[in-house]
Length: 140
Image 1 (cartoon, helix red, strand yellow):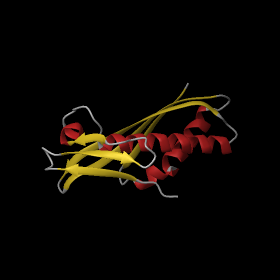
Image 2: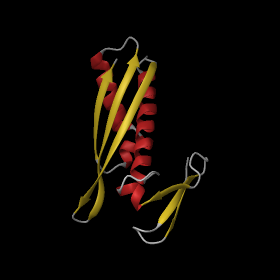
Image 3: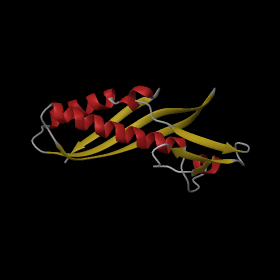
Image 4: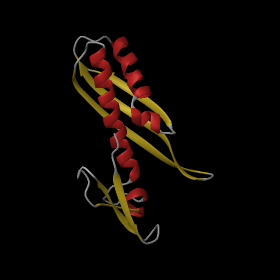
């Protein structure tokens, strides 16, 4: 399976701007720029999209792992916080922190933490990232 997305950029780094699109149409010419990435201007940026991908991938992976263990989650709510830091050789995504709040009937805290850890390590986006991945998992 292959998926694709595209970027169109025009101009210099600080004054230029671009758009991001996905083949599915989930994003169509979504604007991004230096200002949306580094100065908080409205629009998206690559780190936000990586965060959405990681949160979604992790949630699906955990749902699969829970199902194999005999549990069906009522709700998994995941936020991924991506850190972009300047390093000696330029900028790097250094961490992705997953914050999970889950409602799952019949599971113990120990089982929950074990299975959440498996999902953190096993989701395809986690495997892609060359960054420290941390997790805070709360069972409600």
